[in-house]
Length: 86
Image (cartoon, rainbow, N blue to C red):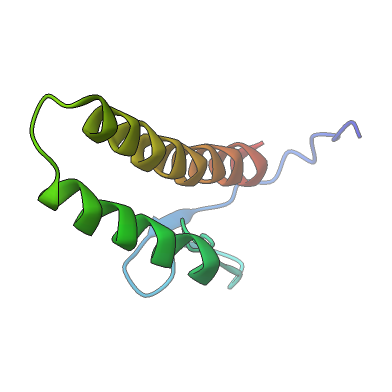
């Protein structure tokens, strides 16, 4: 979908309560990076990682699983920023 420029100027305020507030009174909130169904497995994996022997192959596999879950949140944040700023 192509967007057409209207020539309007809009002020943006980056905040704590709302991620972005526009000068027209519109509030944009970034979605949570991890859903409830993703937060619990990540916490479980982090506890598992803490108990594993450093340098082991199983520890490396657990670190990779945590990194994959974190990457989902990062991708979600980048996608939200892209959609709201263009």
